Length: 271
Image (tube, rainbow, N blue to C red; front, side, top):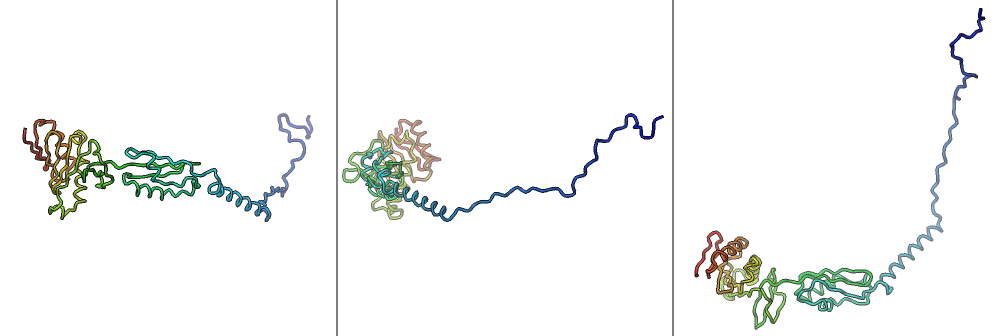
């Protein structure tokens, strides 16, 4: 007979040793916070001196040294003019520091000295080059004066006088010196109307136009090769008139007179 102290079979044994209870108050550890050390007065002075030296060196390199001086001027985009003419008119200060070149002044000088130029872009190309990208005006019409020809662009600006007429550019005849139309609209406005008509002409028609005659704002006539004439009327509805004229010239090859002043009701005569 087992005594009272005998353990039952299958009963779980308690772990050896007494259970330890956690301490009522645990120890806490705090990591030290790194402190940003302010630079000393001596360090601040050294940094300021270095910055001043670097700034002074940069200024000297740009303006005082021979490393970044203007040595070459290049012109591109010319057609009638030559690059040498553009470079000479620019009068850029060669051997001056490239950073000190006044690009706006160079641009204004070129536009003033060379009216053929429509636009100019001046750029620095480090370390020694100044670039001049130019766009020339294109003649739309010619005004004949004293045996020479004034070129007129699409804005109605007379920009150059040449001794020989450029090929493929129609001659403009302004027969409005003492007309009511001239007094009412002014020669400049009539000139702009003429260049508008010239700009509306399709290439296939433009190559055959010899003279564009303006008698009044509403009376603009084209004289084509082969003795053909076109009554254009005013400059209004230019695109529609150009389309109608191109069709008439193909359909009526033997005709000599075309009236498209009212494009919705064109007329053809003379064969």
